Image (tube, rainbow, N blue to C red; front, side, top):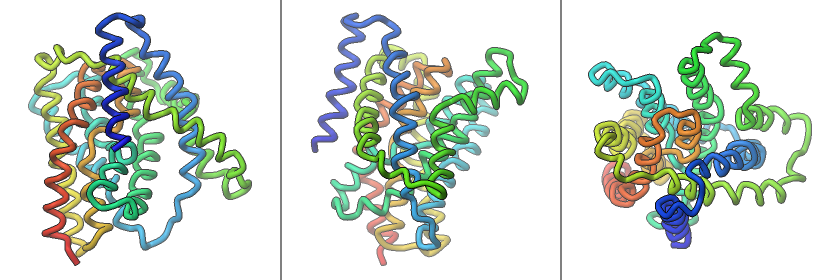
Length: 305
């Protein structure tokens, strides 16, 4: 319950401060800078080394890639009809392809399945983060380069390898093979704890409900995929692979979480339709409380052992 209160409090605080002009109009950029350059690298170094790779986690490993691949296909089909700008195309892809599997997902799992089942979702969350810190970052920075007319491979790679979350993710995958970096975990825990509240506060600062009239088609498409179609695709994969039980159910459940907050912030930071990004995150969090209940009961019927 405390996490749900925190979500409401942080978004509301940002929204109220923005509406009452208590902070400068671009205050969210300073908040985002802390998230992207301090908290996110700390998250990589803290949790990526803890992933235990084995055949037992095959289905949880597949979940983020099914959601990402399905988002790529969905957005390309949608764009073929709607002819989106490059910024809107990438913003839609990123918010569809990456879910909020931890800050929203973990409390949801605790509420529906019990806290003892959260460990089933840890692999999904860490793989989602790796996807964001690598392919997600590359996708966003490539589009940003195209918008600034600096589209050479060298310019894109330069941006990618100068981006701390990407560098930290690569280091987190490599360093543990040579050094024990767990000694700094207490410090990393403190830094990671700042990420979700500040990210939600930033979303609130950028949330402009009046913009829904201009972005309702794109927001509706993003919410349709992320809350309904993505978990449906993962459910189909579970049925094809004959995956049953709590692990399969939680995989479907996590696939239906709202959009990845930090990926949305990064897209906004590079001016990839920031109005859409804040709306799809804010509305997705609210609607996911309803759709998650539906997926919980659906998987309870279809994926029971």
